[in-house]
Image 1 (tube, one colour):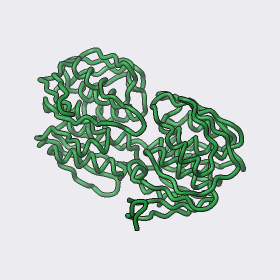
Image 2: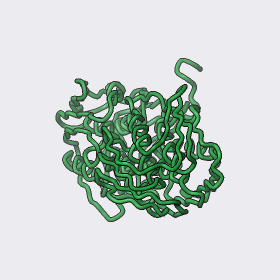
Image 3: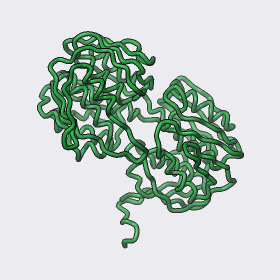
Image 4: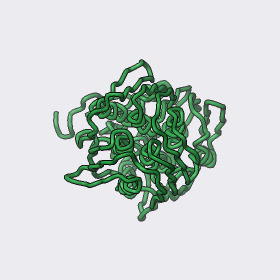
Length: 425
């Protein structure tokens, strides 16, 4: 199992390019199931989650043409095996996003339930209720969602909670349904908007995206299209936090602050100098960060996927910050690992009280999930001495060429490949 060794204390400086957004790419890849014509995608990140989903789509009969660099073409004309088995779904919860497209075009699907999650429950009941409202016959048997339908029917769907994958699944199902579907309490995240842009290029009729009410007028058939995946706003925010914590000045290209207003505002509150360009963001860190309190909530509020990174920068900031997590339970597991580096963090229910210290110390730590891994990298960059981060397969799920990009900025980071398990030679 690979590890990451980071020698802290080096200020970051220079320029790197941000990759395409994983959380936009995953549903857009599933959208290829909706058409027998080719879907050509660019700015696609090369990540473990992307590779897993491509294996799943190929098993269903989708032909994947690698067009080099960050581009590929998917051809689902021979879709013949509408099954998402547990061995693939268990490693990536986004696999549930094949359910809506398979039902809409193929009329049936057998999709494994995703199972547990380290950062808390992510129920799929909103997906199921919405599809049932559209006329699908759905049963859950032996850990699988068994779904069948003729042509889905347009319906009014009001979700109990704003769910990103739920909104995406129902939107993809509705584009081929008979009549109009209205999704109320829809998720407003930029990744939902990016999926809608791709679907519209394929011939879908969608309005209201980016608001909490989305209307979809079903069409008989979708065609092929070309689409560039949006920049990864969470990767952008993570590198901004890394520069803030380690010190220095960085420029991030092929990105924008359009979907990161609240994160940029918090970094400026922490004392960072941030300059915004059309397709780039520049950040210069202060001599010492100031603590910033925050509360996570659905977009456009502060994203839960940036909570761990801000816990890391608050760990070395001047003052005391309160971080309130409202989206997922169990999403403070990185606090204990940050404490191993010397962070002063107290957990009180859904709140974390972070008292900044002047200096963290390197240690061996273990990642528990994707964004927790990012927080440990940020803390390690700011710490004195060497930090070794175990279980970095989490990082490989969501950060493309992490050590390469950090090295470009002057960080001293090395991947230790195929490290033996703890306690063995």
